[in-house]
Image 1 (tube, one colour):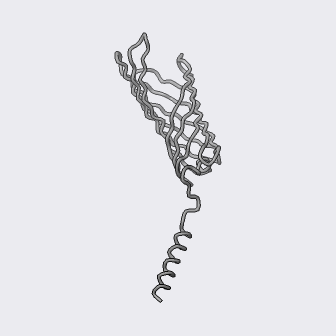
Image 2 (image 1 turned 90 degrees about the horizontal axis):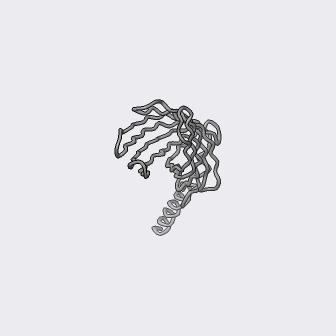
Length: 183
């Protein structure tokens, strides 16, 4: 009798574990196509640190923070923006701080269970101190890896063209890390 009760209790416990187990458990990735759904919020940060040295100029150190929040208004289409803070501290010369507001629009699509692509276009308005207000067009093509539910990181090319000042076109790369909340 006691053995039968033990087997019955064990069977009930195993059945409960199987019934309550997550349906979409993945060892790595598997959630890339969930980012782009209507109603999701994505939080990202495109922070970087740059040290440059030119033969004719001394070393220049730049630190940038750029947290962003985007909302998917329909499947694949996001609207949002970023705020940025930058400190440019040349070895010789005046340190410049820059505050930026950058509204954006994006298009995200899942490529596979683990990879997605998110094209983001923004119009950053930068307010340097000292200096004059700058407006630019920025395009970032992010290839993202989704290692776990609700998280991603990626890298991709970026293109920036100033609209208000005679500044050079910037073509480079950017790193993104972030997460998203389901609706």
